[in-house]
Image 1 (cartoon, rainbow, N blue to C red):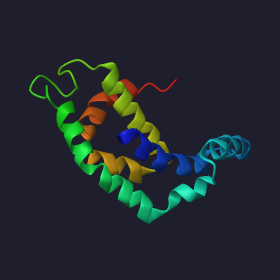
Image 2 (image 1 turned 60 degrees about the vertical axis):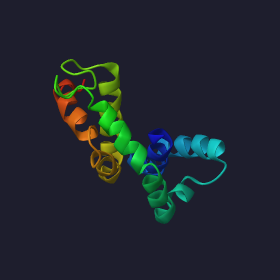
Image 3 (image 1 turned 135 degrees about the vertical axis):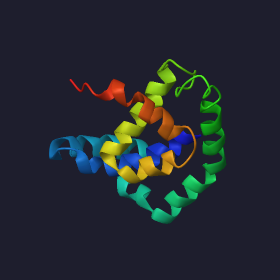
Length: 126
């Protein structure tokens, strides 16, 4: 549910952080799979409608992620799991590309809490 709208928001902005050579490859491969220009995904009205359409699901998923919040900040409680790192990693990748995409996610319960709980694991960047 979240993946397609997340990808649609990140992908067209991602080209802006790539080197010229990487941009060329990125554009060629993504546009071949999309069947249209990457910039066509940047219709702000359509993007807003997509995010609004998944709002209830995002909220429900965020609440589900917080099922064990009494035991700790992670999906399963006290210890991080693959799911926590997937969520935090996705948000961190989006943060590098466009902070607005991150803000669209963390307004729902669970996402920001899990991201912040995973920050100590993201300190080492080698």
